[in-house]
Image (cartoon, rainbow, N blue to C red; front, side):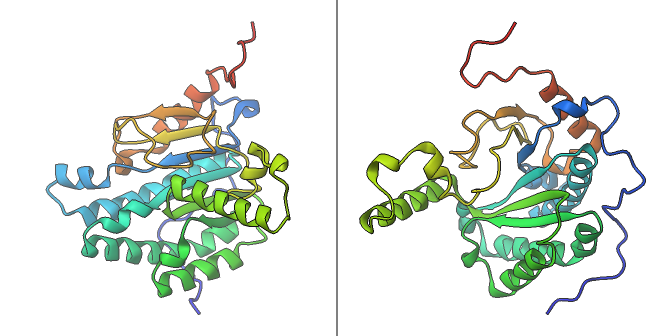
Length: 261
């Protein structure tokens, strides 16, 4: 089994830092933030590098954002790491992404433990290579008792397939008379999703300037605040992430109701 590395050049350790970043209202910190990490390829192209260099640089941004989210007191952070559609990319790129994922899972084990972060994964993880699932399963078990923040990686994930899966399970339970048709409600369906037990995202961020949600948590983000930034994922830094959370705090969430005066 993969061993936990003892040394790292970069760490998520921030025990001596304040929990809430300066300038943010601690009472308005989003509970759950989801991020569509986009722009690695374009970042590399702008620098005349190959796409793999962009993905490697993007992994550094993941470390920065995880650290910042933990400092702010965000309870759930969900990162769209690999979609069901990404399997259609060139095999060399997919293999490189799997290798990068495996390395990230190994290298960050100590930091996740030290900073009380629980790792979670959603999606068709059975499609991942065996060596990746072994490391993933180990990291999930290793951090299972952590309670400070839940870091969820959406891996081989697609929102439509998730909803279809939930519908199929509900139909199966209805046929077996475990549930009655009249019991099928939005609340019940939510219990059949990968994210059951988690709050819906308060805020969804997409980098790179693209203004679409790309099959990410389609059910769960019905009332999420959306923030689009032109910044490519590898260029997103702590200051901009802080500014995005600040922008969220200035919004008035209505959930379809009349705004309060």
